[in-house]
Image 1 (cartoon, one colour):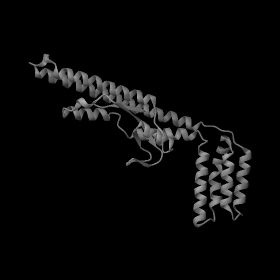
Image 2 (cartoon, one colour):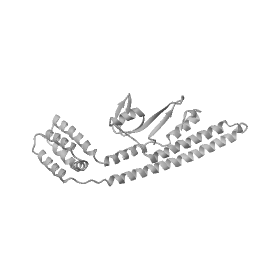
Image 3 (cartoon, helix red, strand yellow):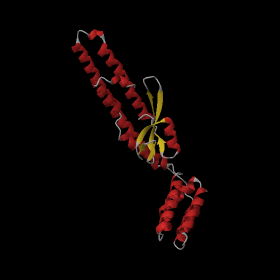
Image 4 (tube, one colour):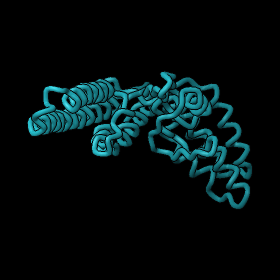
Length: 263
């Protein structure tokens, strides 16, 4: 998985694509981008998707290094293959030419499988490492916020203006620091239940919308989100074959169309 991919057309012009993980589904210029998937998107469009808050860049240097090695090995193979295929030394010995080409293919297949295994192992290591780090996130509990949460839950049981309480909660959350937000996040399930209990119809819908925005703001303070995002990205990467270019190249070789591949 490369964070960026550079494409060169027949005239030597280059354009760059950025690897993006979609955090929300969206449509752009007639293209559909589904939440939870990774796409290579033209650089300017990728920047806009990130700015819009529906995507995040994907960058795992250890995996990228293996992907670059795969492409370099393919480039080496391509050069060697073409040299043998067209070298005059085999003009009178086509059997030897075929043998040498077959050996090249066999060596390449072995190298690709080894790199694929290395890629899978590195991906698993990254997942374990990030998961362990996510479990060690610490923060200082705010007793002031805990007391506020208790009072809010109690007040919600007797008030007829639960929407008003949700609005006040949003204002107070906007003034909290990260530790205070994380403290409140731990109590948010009970708060949400108290503010929605007994509500109905449009009022309940509005309260839930307000609570959804508050919850998102509380979670934004949590470093856990960064770890969770990376783990979701790795899960998406795991669904893709790191040898896709190799498979496509093999097919192109059989069609005598391999010249269009630039690794």
